[in-house]
Length: 392
Image (cartoon, rainbow, N blue to C red; front, side):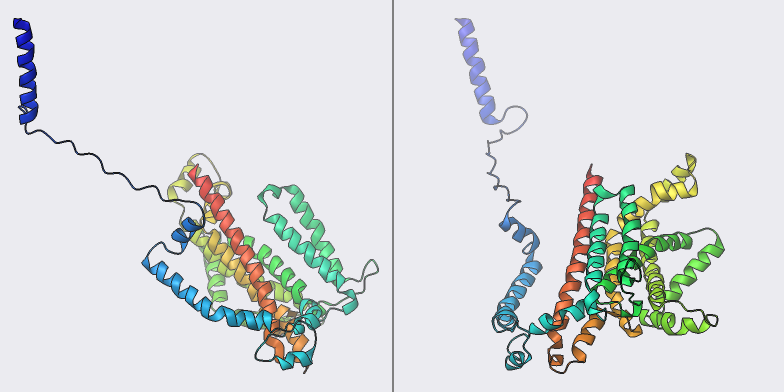
């Protein structure tokens, strides 16, 4: 019985202690944790809009302003470009809708001159096939799964085939001089070859500017600063009109070759500075670590420095490629009629279609945009792959 009273006394004392807070301080009242908000959905259209267009106040205001401008401009643009447009090659019908509707008939009527320039009409299937081959090889070269010896072999086969198709003179093909090449084939050919030649040259120049040998560093620096100090038009002018004056009597170099060299040297100078920026981002300790394990200079650059440096400046490299592709339009000043020059040939000499040059420019602008946007998307895919590789 005494034990029962003792247990009851202990229980009462414990209850009193809990009520008064006990010997260590006042009791803490139980406070339930507030309910957390539901997680924000990270997928779907609403999440994409919230993340990309309405992430903060400035973005939201900018989005609303752009939407308002589109609502204001888009109906008139659709009416001009689609509803009231003329798509038949009828100059009289185009004059009747001038100012209220587009005349796409100029593209229907002149598309072969715009796309192929002064290339002989009956032989235009040859540059068409050559262009398809070049574009296919460029697309294949962008696929990492195809980076092997067979791709290099394919380029060695395709390039001679392209030049044989364009130039002719063999296998029963009619010979066509390079000054008659034009339109899209010339643009694709020049841009592809200039980019392919400028890239390794730019790497060499960038490494040369960082060389510890004063002569190599000085030559590389002078080359970059000299080329960057003049516009591309002057480089093309010198290559086309001034350079032949310094050649020996009776020695001539094809104008297309001179233009190719001029654009390549110009593009390489700008691209070299982009690559040099990537080289400077590599910590010096990595180079010293490579030297400590016995790697030579070129092994260090090839296996350690260049892969990281080029991955760092992918956006800048693709931006230089896009710039080179668009700069190919300047060859018109040396009488090589690529896309923009071919458009001038198509409409300037025809009084019936001359007033509708704007529609022609929009057509070639769409071609340029498609090519540049494709390169931009490819750059984004490379960056995404690099981000995933760094996350592992």
